[in-house]
Length: 541
Ligand code: FAD
Image (tube, rainbow, N blue to C red; front, side, top):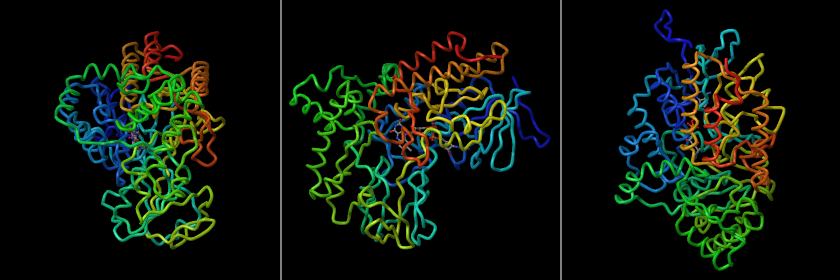
């Protein structure tokens, strides 16, 4: 195990672990390893902590997980010290929470901000990572831990002519710190995923005119957000242990019960009653109303029809309502929650363009030209999502044993193969928090993040205790995990849809399904069992 060293200038360049990213994952990883006595350096490209909540400052940005479940659970004191204001917190409140955590555990002193990791090479002779940053420095660490997030690389579309646009343009995932003033402006929003649907109603209230460019209509459900009552908060804090256990054992990281009924075994009236109740309650519960909504196409169609009915009831202009009707399998794309999204299309200053019928051809100096017309715009907002799951990992330019890069390893197939989403063969001492083929984005992420951080922390402690300093996933274990991950996914409707889960939103990206759908609780048990068997499937040296 490497020990802490000082260079002549008094700046350390040798660490037990380098962690990349200071969002939910990186902050807890730093704390966990430091508590165990390891030296750690965190690098963060942003000026502050927070990860996606630092970058995504677009109007209306908020969380779709309920606040009382969207936080760390590793410390009861921390849970009791922080009080959320509303059911679904807005971005500034989540950012404040993560800053509070950083202060509470004195994390900043080991984080280097505004520093991007640009390379990482495994030095086989010394079993260490050589990590390069964009300020030209190189440090070395026994372990490289990526906490780069699944959604931290913005997907800016490559429309012809963007550089000639005379107005201003923004991507929701890289929003300026100062408020963007939409008053009196003609605004175009491109994209109607989660960020688009959150920002459109807010922008529409300010802009003189808003044109929404939609490729895929969405099944969005109302968040039904509200302030939390004192009683709710007291109860949540009292139930800390029970909630934590339920979340950890659950399929998706939420403490809610799942139905054991099929949508097809009940009467139409009963189904409607269940869907209406879930719609009224709001949040992400629609998808867990029946057990087979993501497995059976027929069951899925019942909830699709219910939501289409809601859209038709809400949107007054029949033609616009028709354009807003989705047709993919419900929940096979990122579920979307909204606050008055469909109602926004009843405003006089909002219009909708279907870019599947009328594709965007180019950005002109004055706006957007589609196949049919030119829309003059002062501000363009790209709500076009992220290069999900692998984008930020590949940008690290990681090269492992024999100089093989992660890009080379993952390029030749649709699947970014990993062992448990935590490690990948050929890359010793590399750990990925919420890496591909773990439950990650199809779970309440803080629960999955904590599980990974604790597993990695325990593993590194185990290696220290046993005088080992090298661990690598075996190819056969990885192959089996990757196959299992795909088979589980392929028994559902998820692989039958085109989504950012499958990589279909990125031109030329091979389509796969890099998310483990076996359930958060089940996955945790698998990982624990592997550790208990002396890290079965890994080679230790
Ligand atoms: P991130 O928060 O993405 O942080 C990664 C950090 O790594 C970033 O700050 C980035 O700057 C840094 N980084 C990346 N590459 C480098 C590099 N090369 N060098 C230095 N630094 C680097 N999850 C839920 O569970 N529920 C929700 O409701 C929910 N809502 C979301 C809404 C939005 C708009 C977005 C974008 C995501 C949402 N998520 C949600 C997912 C969210 O990503 C996770 O919940 C969680 O915040 C991820 O934390 P993280 O630390 O793993 O990654």
